[in-house]
Length: 198
Image (cartoon, rainbow, N blue to C red; front, side, top):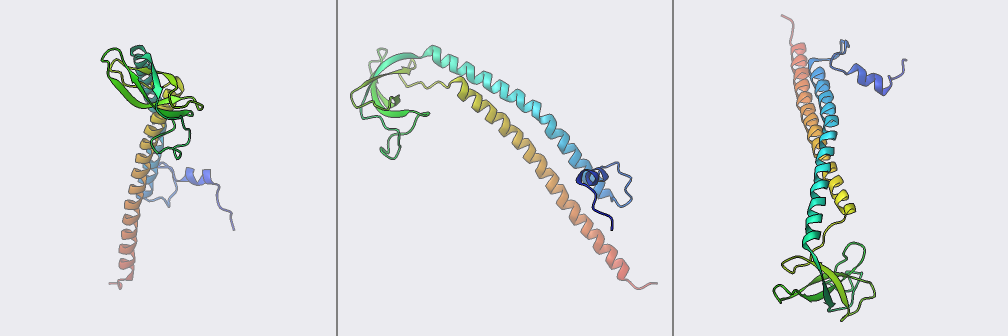
């Protein structure tokens, strides 16, 4: 008994231009669609790379703009800095450091501002830390190059995954429709075979 053909050989036999006499028209349509989707998904890679590059450049520009508009001001901590959000429900981890509530005043409007700010792990209530605020006195947290790169790569990968998922859904949907068509053809053939000869 002949062994089963290797995977690449089987895939080659399923190509749309195959001379295999056992291939039906629906088989050729399905294999052509699969080949088209594979080509489109591969061509989608450079498009996603361009989108990721543009996203990174835009984020870098935003970070530079925020940094140019920001200025340092002293902020007085209201409570001790914590690194575990469970220690204080109002606290959260900022990046990999610790956070605390603080109050600061901006010379522009003279208003007091309160919010969560990054703080050293050993900081205690009453200590003063330097923060960056915008023209309106609100806290500014500009992303660094690493964070911008991660966001850009995530955007590019997400866009590619969405395109690949769309292609896979098209192939899956077409496969199901063709399977139903083949089953109907088989039913019709069996009904014709079961009819008595005239």
